[in-house]
Length: 165
Image (cartoon, rainbow, N blue to C red; front, side, top):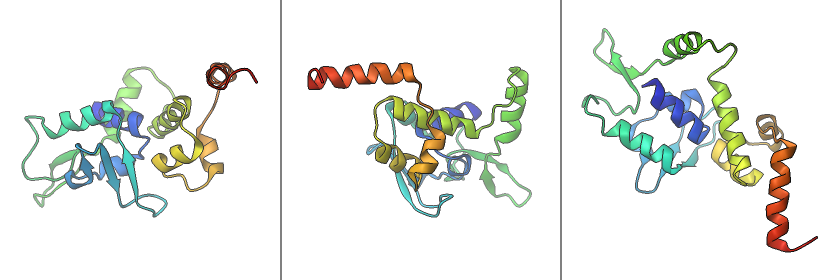
């Protein structure tokens, strides 16, 4: 389950809490969207899904071990009261990071990576903010770390489309 969650984080930029609490009715595979109504900043948003994220959700939803008694996408074992709660992935995350010998990687770093990838793909600030849920461009800039060498190729692309400047 941790693998699914990590891939969703990398392909969507969603926060850990947003991923953990996802239910079936929030995911629309035909439209390739996820509706997040309970977000950190209090504003609902619709997250578009890449083909890769859509494939992960399809795999999760169609998995043969998926229990029938939950609407959660990432489900945990029933508690003493018999109710299923979201899968608590943090122990598996910490164990995996430790076993891999990786020091200092936080789950939230996947959100930084996802947002940086969106910028590197050529999406504008407003498009990225709409996907990631950042309300201010100042906060969004904290997540994007553009490298000069990436900007060179982007400048070349733009220049070839517009002719010589």
